[in-house]
Length: 175
Image (tube, rainbow, N blue to C red):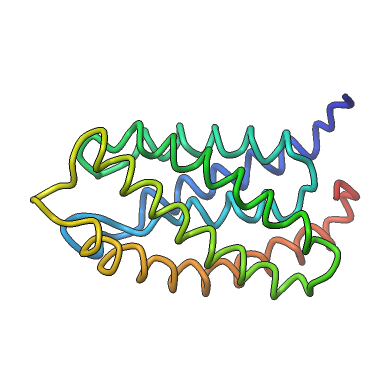
């Protein structure tokens, strides 16, 4: 295995930006907010084509979002959700990586990945700690996950394009 330091630095910076977005995002309902760090996780997985990067990024993103979660006892569910989601997104990309337009891939991965992430997060939180305020899985899914999916779909494509343009203009030849 060859260590590519430029690739590692770029991925780390993207995840750090995701952490900042996660932290400054305002709450939508009952103090919960969409997880914009997911967008950066998806972008890291989209611009890299190896499983190790997807897994490592999922673990790192899970730890970072666990440190900044506003969800009561949401630390472990955050880690579980990011690991499961990074696996699922990587596996979804395998059959379509070279077949679809990058814009279409970004939208599809962002929408499906956010729904997977939200479902795994809420499911694991319900099992491990219970959902806050006696809210049901369905209510939180409709009230938080679906709006977050819309926000992530729009923001994901915008950020994906900005990052792709930046990587091309930087002439870094990392990807």
